[in-house]
Length: 481
Ligand SMILES: *[C@@H]1O[C@H](CO)[C@@H](O)[C@H](O)[C@H]1NC(C)=O
Ligand SMILES: *[C@@H]1O[C@H](CO)[C@@H](O)[C@H](O)[C@H]1NC(C)=O
Ligand SMILES: *[C@@H]1O[C@H](CO)[C@@H](O)[C@H](O)[C@H]1NC(C)=O
Image (cartoon, rainbow, N blue to C red):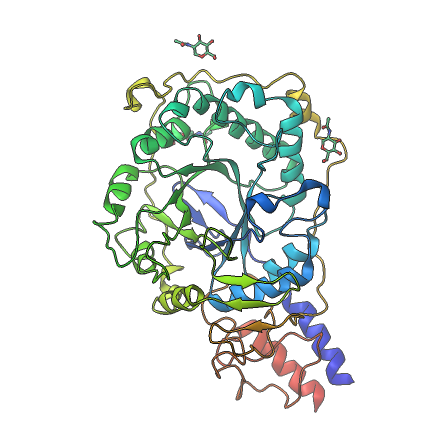
């Protein structure tokens, strides 16, 4: 009994927060350690984009049992970030955000949805740029701005998807970015980066990037400049390499970047199953001066066949060989070193906006942005009405309730999220997933020889217990004696 109480207290203590990250010049930086941060991410959208239904009162971050299952599997995989495309600002996300936070994972959120009135359109963008659209966008900001693990907001995703859309769309995306940044500045207690997620259409990619990251005369505080730039890129297929996959083109094209750049999606699925050999290149020295990691598309298996995990409607799940192969690739890397790189003291400066930056004929080179639509400035100044509010809450039980199988069909036993110590970012090995690889049962860490209660933090995983947790164990040990 005494032990159980102590363990519950321990669990509560360990469910601490990740450190909110900052953008410093062209890098994400942990302000506490001064270390750069590389995104090791997975796109998280169970049900796919088409599955998003505002009226259902559900979204990918609304069901804590599902989030717990997925956070456990993603934690074991070794990722530190999820990208979530479509969220409903008016449902409660506290438990899911808290679970991912405790698991050492950040969230990158798209503020738009595919529903009419909830995103900027590629065709006639001015028709979709109005106050009610911005109100909904600001509601997403409100719903997520108070979680420490909110890493960034995407102001748009692939709104520009070919040369034609390059003619009209750029000023509108830049205007939306400005409006969201102004909203964050006025209403968030910390700066949260805002930027665009581009389709990797090489013909217009660098024009897009230059249009969004250049500095506009008279734009005080660079409010319309993207804080980050990301691209959905599928040019590395199968057993490719830096040159063959044209990653060299990306590095050369973005070199001198003044904002963090990362893959907001990657993971070409032809051929399939995937072998993810791009992973070691993305986190290797050919890329990391320019890139800050990437997000693998995607967590759940859908019709388009990009999934790491297959789901059933009863909540049960099975890992796919893509999960195993991605885990294998992550496992080859030394993330302690990768995540401990220091930002260089010299920073890159963004170019001044000028039509000379634009190289493709027909791509917009007019940097006079549309003014906020009627009613929008008041929303920015005063805040939206009935703003949702998120907060980190205590999670009582870290054990996954559903049956999850390995790719070979065997059942994973004792599947649970392992809450990490304060300021700890998840990395491969943080949660060894006892029962999956036989390496889960911790011995020699001084923990009591008892089964932790359901409510307790799993305290297995030999060798990965942080110093802070160790000292708690020491106290706990004395307490039990
Ligand atoms: C705006 O961006 C330019 C170019 O990177 C930079 O030199 C300047 O310091 C920025 N201004 C502010 C207020 O952040
Ligand atoms: C640039 O865009 C602004 C705002 O839409 C417009 O008023 C202006 O005429 C445009 N300038 C040129 C040269 O097309
Ligand atoms: C703005 O968003 C809030 C929160 O979703 C909502 O309650 C309110 O009705 C919206 N207002 C308008 C004018 O759309």
